[in-house]
Length: 398
Ligand SMILES: *[C@@H]1O[C@H](CO)[C@@H](O)[C@H](O)[C@H]1NC(C)=O
Ligand SMILES: *[C@@H]1O[C@H](CO)[C@@H](O)[C@H](O)[C@H]1NC(C)=O
Ligand SMILES: *[C@@H]1O[C@H](CO)[C@@H](O)[C@H](O)[C@H]1NC(C)=O
Image (tube, rainbow, N blue to C red; front, side):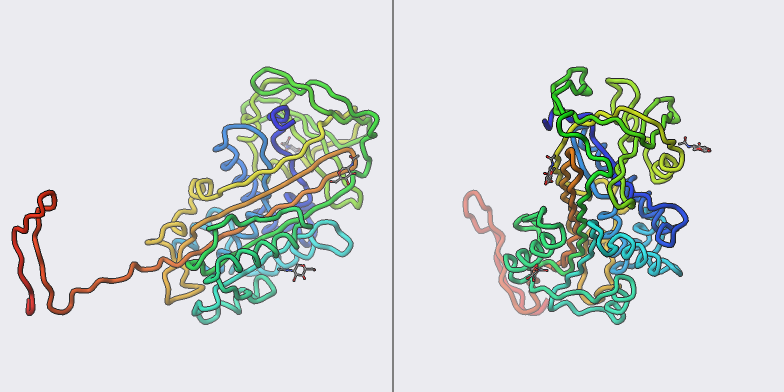
């Protein structure tokens, strides 16, 4: 099944990618965050060399926006430049709060949460807690990272709780340890039933055409429906189709896009993706009756976001010597050690279950212990292979 799906590499949950323009939660920041997430996907998926993949643009944008709060100097400016907004700009924190509320409305099976965990002993910079409260509505939780196994259990339990149990063991052993000072996490969970389910009896094995020209049978669902659909062309002249499958409840839908002709590499389409394009699809599709054939699929992807973020100009924050986390802690030098994401999605006749966890793990650049010869010392100059001592002496008053 996984191999057969190689070409159906991506889908977008429209509710999380492009909130309806004009609504109070679909303003400039939501648009910029969606664009950042989509461009990060493009960078990240390009490095995997094809194949199935699932990513959470919202999860990545939420963690990187929170990371802005902890950083200063070039570390901060590079994050702002990559994301297109600064979390301190007037109105931004308010818009992010509205966005968070809009995503987790009562009764919704969409839940997005952010978690902030700081090392218990970390001396926080003045105002750091207030900034987190203002932007994220809550102070950081304190964790004893000195007990790595317990800390990992706490964080993994938080992720599991906030992803309807579908992401377990998110942080691998070693991802957080005694050197961890801050962990910013985002969890997104979604469960949706199609507004119009696919009739189970219509599913049958049919060929799925892989990018290498071969075909393999896959369980393909089918339904005839009036749905929103559009035919588009990339700037390079590649024609492709987009269809929208709404979930019940009306706020979330899945957009599915594929080149109009077989055996065209999906990269030709993925390379043109950005937030504006997804918004243009949503705006330009028209309703028509179509027979929609879509495979049933189930994917899980673990991402290391460091290289794609660096390619987008977010570099200083990863470099122990250059990173500036003085907005969080002025006393200890810190750097971003890892940016990780794990995502699962399952799509069948009834609907979709999906979950994502993203984390930025900030470590102390622990200065190596000093060995200071600031008192009288002996010295020897030795030829190691033979053990011959060529010179020796002592220094008592240099
Ligand atoms: C996870 O949920 C359980 C049950 O609701 C709760 O007891 C536990 O404290 C939660 N853990 C975290 C880390 O949120
Ligand atoms: C969407 O439609 C507008 C005008 O209606 C057009 O300018 C724009 O290019 C279209 N976008 C796409 C992606 O086709
Ligand atoms: C689809 O998957 C969900 C779990 O993700 C399951 O509860 C449901 O029964 C499945 N539907 C069909 C038609 O297989």
